[in-house]
Length: 258
Image (tube, rainbow, N blue to C red; front, side, top):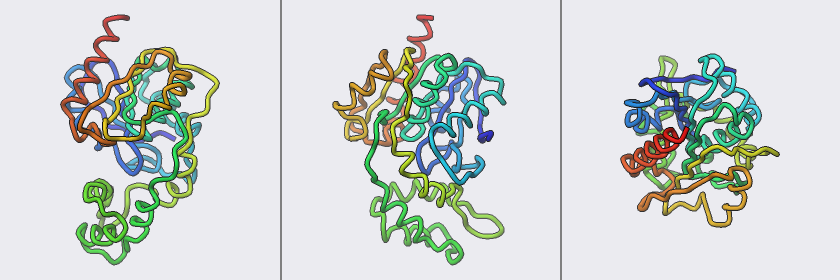
């Protein structure tokens, strides 16, 4: 399938890929900060945002969708930045198509299997009675019965869409729930991506841990890492200037070595 994209800026292409339950707008701050020097292609994942829906989601299928989308845009080589689930997809794509990725930036995720951690989110989303609510405030109250963190609820509510027919989630909740275990898995590949890779970790996040280093280097032997202090998993939103600066410096430093 061809995924929904939003492009801005001009220059060498940089693809941005958001995480689970999000949309391309989650990385809008990064896009704005970098569009002065790069053509930014922000992508909605399958079953998210304005991209098509499908019953199944796994990394081989998403890699194929991403390749088809880049083909449709006539982009043969791109730099790629992904956060969380988007980072896993970016890694899987680089392993499958190393010749198409000039540089890879992975925000707060590792190429490892993760345990289930979104049960309360799924419970909250399923608890929202879409046919009965009349406002986002109504939805927030129902989410709050399962999700205590205000920031998480606000993030999810960004995908609550109101049309003439009423409220709906932009993401395909049944498919995400059905495919969740697939999305937790590490990308499966016998290949390596030997190009330049930057992992950016939130200092207070446990998504990238010291024990992940061997697995990271087995796939990405040239990987380097940076840590942003005072941030958790949403590092690009919590310290946008610091995040954008790391990305810019990495892209420019690697660019000068070509």
